[in-house]
Length: 258
Length: 313
View 1: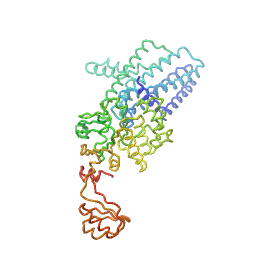
View 2: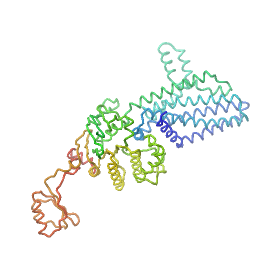
View 3: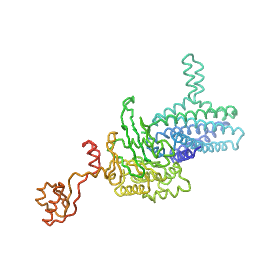
View 4: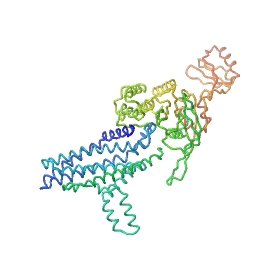
């Protein structure tokens, strides 16, 4: 990775860390973990199930909100405030700017998820008094959540490279919701015929398959995750994020910064 | 080699709901700026100055034509490492301190880590902000941000500096300091290209100027040449408040200001006027030929009504 990408990523990370909204969300996520403990205490024999479900869902949802909330402004805010002018008038290629922004936000989300995960494991330890071997699958679920963050960050950047923050937010949230039901969409496509089938199948494969990346429920029930799924999900997420990022670069390379 | 060579650079935007209506921001522009000169790019607001600078910075793409800076294409990173740019009304990452911002820009410009701290100190000193390096930019006034903008443009010791309205937001002292800084840059052998609509700044600083209006180049030349033509008139200034009647008979236009009188009259009547002042025992202060000012030239190149509305001198 070029030094300039690292510097842009570091600055993006610093901006996010100094953003008070981010701190509020972390605090809120920790509060959710606290709530999980409370619910765990009033739930008989299913404390672990409730804590893992609620904790990981909070990590996922708050991470997604951060990814979309910050991601949609990554490019458009820089254009609107004209901070981009003094960056691109230096020996910085436009694609380096986009990739640097992506890694900066992705790094922020990973760090954010790391602290949230500590909260989840702390809550688990609190309700179970000790860790179990199956708790290791929680790490896999967290890994899949991070893969989701990579996809949504790349998509937010893609939308941010050509539309307003409001529209970008609508598009990104829309894709997140639809992508969370991607498996159902594929099932629906299989039930249709003719042109409708082609359209539904196309749409089902175009939207990010977040449902395949969601194993929260199965790890909460202490079910293992296959190595094959980990491999497929990794490849899928990397390809999807790379394609979305390439789209963002392609659009941004030809954009007039009026 | 020319520092900047612009060959028919043109920009037309598509406007309107369906983006079908063309709006010409810059008509084909041909311009050359030599190394080591201070070049003023003059024009009223909305003339096309900022569009030209954005085209040169690669921020917008030309409809046609091309430009070369320091002999390289405008998107060449090697060229961009050797130029500095101050945008109009700059806005910076306000969560950073001035020092952090300059460090970031230094990193992007490839300034070596061991030199960066020293250069940041030097440049903060140079723009008159030596004590606020650790202050977040959100606490800076408009004038201080303008100074930070100038600092980031010269931090990496560029060969060529582009300033878009560098005096904007500065008080009279600040304007003077920026003028001094630009002259220092010239003395260091750097080329300075700056846009402005403040003609007195351009007249005081520039070796050459270009005048642009409605996206079209209206004139270009050395300031000394543009202001050297005389009207065949002289300006005579003397101490006192009285105007000899013989001077009025010579057709002099007289203006009394405080304890001095300024008279403008035909060059042919100069000797008679001086003789009349001697007879009246009035103390002569100066006799100078009336020259075309840059403002006169500017107004001449624009429609009078537009010039009045668009120019502050």
